[in-house]
Image (cartoon, rainbow, N blue to C red; front, top):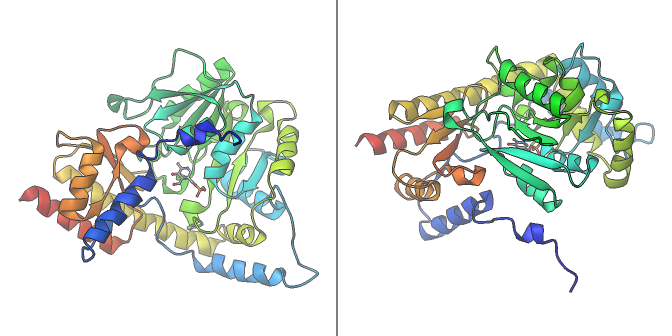
Length: 387
Ligand code: PLP
C-alpha cells in the first residue's frame, strides 16, 4: 500500500467542528422532539442581497452566448480586481498584478504557504482558527503556537525568537477581538526587523466599527513590505455557499514575487467561477452596500444582545464589537466539552468548545444565527442561570 500522508491522519477529530456535529446528531436521534438552537454557527444566515443576485442572473446569460461566454481564468477577472482595489484599497497604489481572486480564504490561508520554502518557521496564536495549523501540518510545515494571554486581551506579546511566517486573524475567530492600529504596528515592526511575513486574515473586516481598528493592514506604514492580506465575500456578502475570495501580495515584499506566484497559480489552480466574480463585483454597487450594511447591523445587534446576556449573568466576555463572535470564560469548574454537553442537555443550545480553537477554559458564541433563535436562546440561558 502506498503510504498515506501521516499529517492528515494525525489531525485531531476529537477537537474539531465535525465532532460538534456528530454529538449534536447523536443527541437529536435520542431526543427527536427537542428544539435545539445553535449559537455555534460560523456560517451566515442572511440571504445574498438582490442586486448581487441580479448581477449573477445576467452572468448566467453571458455564458449562453458565443460573444460573452467565459471559460478558464485562473487568477480572476480584471473587472473584479479593479473594483476591489478601488473600493477597499483606494490610494494604496496596488496594481491588478498584486491581487489574486480565489475560491475562499480557507483555501488561500494554506495554499499561500506554497510560496515559501518548506523549512520556514511558522507561528499561529492561541486561540486560533484551527485551519491555519491543520493546513500547515498537512503540508508538513513546522509550526509553533504562541499563547495569547487573557490579561493582554488575547493579543499575543511579540515573541523573542524569530518566526518567518505569522498568521494574524483580525477581527479574530474565535475571540471576536480586533487588533488596533497600535497593536498591529508592533507586529509590522517585528516582521520588518526579522524579515518575516504576516499572513493577515481579514475575513471579518466588514464587521469593524471601532475607530482605532484598521479595515486593512495596509493602512499601517510598512505593511506593504511584510504583509499578505486575505479577505473573502463569505461573511460580508453571504458567499459561504457561492465562493469568492481575494488576497494581496504586495510587490514590495520581494522582487518579482507576483511573477513567481503566477507560475504556481497557473499550475495548481483554475480559478473561481465567472458567475461568483460578477456577483462579487456587484457587492460594491451602492444599492448592495446599503443592504449589506443592514445585514452587518443585524448580526452586530444579535451578538450585542448575547454579550449583554452573559455579562448580566456575571461571565467574563470578550469580543462582539468588531466581529460576530463573543469569547466567554467558563464560570463552572469544568472544561469546554463538558460545558458543551451541559448546554446541549440542559438548555438544548449548541456552543463551540474553546478547545477546538486551543483554549479549554472558554467557549465561542456566534451572532450569525437567526435573530428569533438568538432571542429564544437568551431567554433559556437567563432562565437557567437565574433559577
Ligand atoms: N478565515 C476565518 C478566520 C474564518 O473564520 C473562516 C470561516 O469561518 C474562513 C477564513 C473561511 O472563509 P472562506 O469562506 O472565504 O473560505
